[in-house]
Image 1: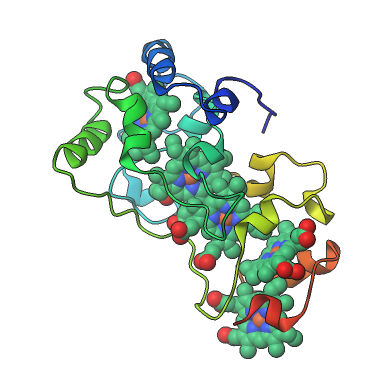
Image 2 (image 1 turned 60 degrees about the vertical axis):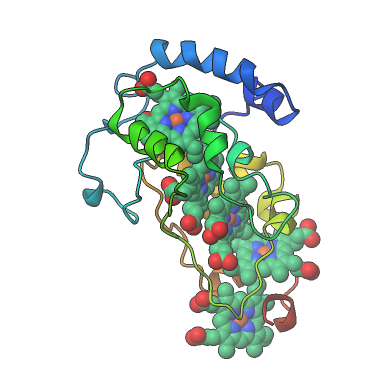
Length: 197
Ligand code: HEC
Ligand code: HEC
Ligand code: HEC
Ligand code: HEC
Ligand code: HEC
């Protein structure tokens, strides 16, 4: 993925949401996901894609590549907390008050907001409760395999090419051997109590 210092870095620095709405109201009409770099049209059978079917067909490939969104715009806590967090509906509505009107998947989002009904995203990754996994320690690290990577590249070192996934699937095994291989290579801790409660 290319390094980007554009609009979304500015958003992360706190530029008013209204600027984003204005920018994407025009981006939405100028860039149709079906004709741009995204490979899968909106009206597909999502059950045929890898990964669990989600209540709304929200596409990472479209938002991350076509709209150049930073992972941390939505997974806002990745650098400061064990859990990266999922976006609230108001994060989506910053753009979707305007963008994508009439798209049936966007209409599902708007209906949920109007009915004040939270979207129940299906979990893709789930470690056993006896394992500790601190996202921030990884995302902030420049050791070993993370050396020289930007934030999105660090995410994708573990999560695979999310920027090419119309529907997110589990890329790595998440087994102990997967963690240890990288910890050995990166000279990170292999102490049992670091990962286990
Ligand atoms: C516009 C908001 C948005 C952006 C930007 C975004 N995501 Fe997400 N992400 C979501 C939503 C919503 C979900 C839950 C639904 C789903 O799985 O598609 C999610 C789910 C995920 C999951 C699966 C979580 C689980 O249940 O285990 C991963 C991994 C992930 N995102 C990684 C990334 C990465 C890496 C990037 C940047 C390349 C990124 N996301 C950018 C909104 C976003
Ligand atoms: C920065 C602006 C922005 C944000 C934030 C954003 N979107 Fe979008 N989204 C767009 C644009 C622009 C389109 C393309 C609309 C069109 O086709 O006219 C789009 C398209 C979509 C679509 C249609 C299918 C697809 O993915 O192309 C869905 C569903 C969608 N967004 C859901 C969401 C959800 C859910 C969130 C919050 C997790 C979100 N969006 C956050 C700008 C945004
Ligand atoms: C070192 C590997 C690694 C890196 C780097 C990493 N993740 Fe994860 N991610 C994981 C693992 C492992 C889980 C499962 C955690 C669990 O179940 O406790 C996970 C879970 C998630 C989830 C689901 C959380 C939930 O609430 O269920 C999201 C969203 C996510 N990661 C996004 C990101 C984003 C965005 C980045 C980059 C900013 C990132 N990850 C970087 C390994 C990684
Ligand atoms: C791609 C490489 C990579 C993978 C995969 C990975 N880690 Fe790490 N992990 C690191 C690095 C590098 C550090 C050290 C961060 C630092 O100190 O800069 C680290 C640090 C940690 C820490 C904090 C250690 C301390 O000393 O406090 C924990 C806990 C941890 N990892 C758990 C896990 C678990 C659990 C998994 C598997 C689910 C995992 N990691 C997978 C690279 C990785
Ligand atoms: C870098 C992180 C990490 C370290 C260090 C680590 N483990 Fe694990 N361990 C894991 C993960 C991840 C799993 C798999 C969790 C899952 O399947 O959800 C696991 C699973 C296990 C299991 C369950 C195995 C099974 O088949 O279900 C045992 C027992 C275990 N570890 C013991 C240890 C012992 C003893 C040590 C020290 C010698 C150790 N672990 C060090 C991350 C780690």
